[in-house]
Length: 255
Image: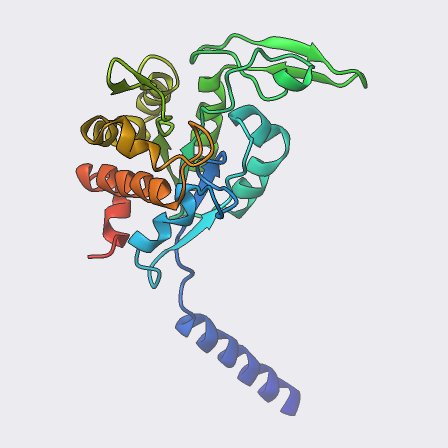
């Protein structure tokens, strides 16, 4: 009798704990390259800044981006598998790639990160020196994989175009509107995912400021911004979220 009484008390306590347990906060997972996650010394990624614009009592930012990665290697190195394994309904995935995709995909060091251009189903088959086989796909294929697998977990994918480089022609900063930015939008539209044209939003600012002012944001090269430059990109993302009321992340931004 006493055993039954103790069992009943334990069950009641467990039910009470479940009833009063706070549901876990949604998480914004960030995936991408060094422009999202960098050393945070001389050069910074916007992923280290963007959490400042969200109410951390309601949502958490988890920056899983890694310097030097492309869509292909982010999957190949099981970095995406790690994020996918943590996803739960109500979470978000912000994805921004494009800086490391440009080399011809092959088994040389230079081709390790490269993908095929575009959004189609083209592939190239590689055989590595150890005999390992690899099928390389297009940039769009890999983004589509991220989007579909995010949705399968009940989470929300948001596609971002890559940040603009400090690269100018005829007084205007060069944009990604004919390649990676264009392809990112095409895939987002095809898959019903929200798209933030980070490239264009920041490029508009650069054009207004001029090359001499923008140069202060890039201490080492034309790709990796300092903290001030990373903040510009984080603010561009926030502007992109606010401009699209359908993006439910709006509810978590600081007022």
